Amino acid sequence: MDPSIFKAYDIRGLYPDQLDEEAAWKIGYGAAQFLRSLLRGYERGQANAQSLCVGHDMRTHSPSVSKALIEGMNATGANVIDIGMIDTPQMYFAINHLGTCGGVQVTASHNPAQYNGFKISGIEAKPISEDTGLKEIKHIATALLHTKGRSDGSVEKCSLVDGYSEHVLKFLTPKLKPLTIVIDASNGMAGKSVPEIFSKLPIEIIPLNFEHNGTFKHDPNPLVDANLEELKQTVVDTGADCGVCFDGDADRLMMVNEQGENIGCDILTALMVPYFLKNNPGSAVVYDLRSSHVVQEEIIKYGGTPRRERVGHSFMKKTLRDSHAVFGGELSGHFYYRDNYFADSGMITLVHMLNILSATDAPVSELVKPLRRYFCSGEMNFKVEDKAAAMKELSRNYATGQIDDLDGVTIQFKEWWFNVRPSNTEPLLRLNVEAKTQDLLYDMLDELQQILGEPVDH
Image (cartoon, rainbow, N blue to C red; front, top):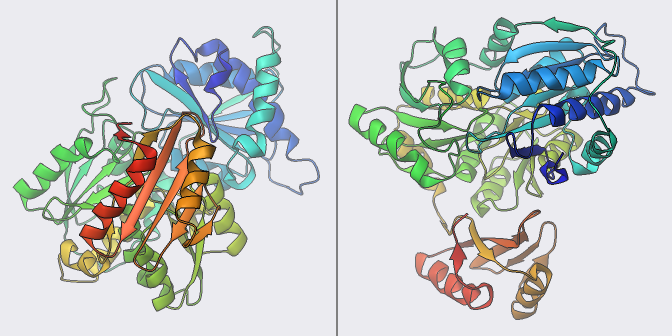
């Protein structure tokens, strides 16, 4: 087993070179041992408290990887509820709905077709990351010398389609408008989940890339602008109200307006602020520190409590839970909800967007226009070998600004601000800059590139 497949938030690698069925068995064994150990001192009376959920995405090798994972879990004596081919947010629902001590989704999310991986969740679907268990699971899995053992655990197959659909649609307003929406499933799990959940609603869905044939027409990463070209063109050609593109495992989405223009996910967060705070006055709203200042301004304007957080779903979910925030948004397209077990969901985000659009006659471009009051660079990557030294140099050069180190280094001035944070796995620094004018944004980018060099594609 290649130990490099263990990342900060999940497990991911090339199939079968880095991650194969043998590795899956060992990871299943390690995950089952660790997740069941979390029950110690935890009062749970549910019948499934000692069981684990397993699901998988649509990749051609996911069923065999999932089968090996389950066999590894069974070898520890753990019982497994196999919920089949699902989107990742359905795993969070399953763990809570069935009352298991955790679960594993077999998926490589937005990576190309030759990748696979595992997203591991604990009790109440709390994320298992490097700091909360992945190191322990890695230690157990990599110490195993073989994949043999008595299969003392059981396997129960279970479909949760009806319960999951009911859970997602309980957030829908009864006053739904007859909207037309283009949905690009990226040949991913949204191609299965969207028809299951939304087919009976009085909206017209124009489907793109709903097929599962082992390939991706474009990489299932909606953050890359090139992957949105077909969506944008279809929205314009059909006169649709908006377009939505999901990632491979359907826990993230990007949206474009009726003119085929991108809507940044921080702008979507800001758009949802009055919608959520209207019925949850004074609640906290969590957002990642790359987000536009418009998010904080909207939260304050509508009487909420802004909670700025580090990038990454484990940090966002913990802060959401700790502050009992009503929702949270991340620039990457993850949106988290208090009433969804403090977890993210692409399908529930689509429901909330349908509600917002149904409450107005204004087109999407007009809804977001007042929120586009700053100019943003978008996330840019720079190849930097000594990341710590570069961040120190930036802090020295801009020492007159307000500096904090919540995640990398953030330096704020009256007219502009920037954040630079290091990649966990590569010699890269990731830069986000925002300014009050386009000219100032360009000037500051030029200045910062004198230190960071030329941006690279990533």
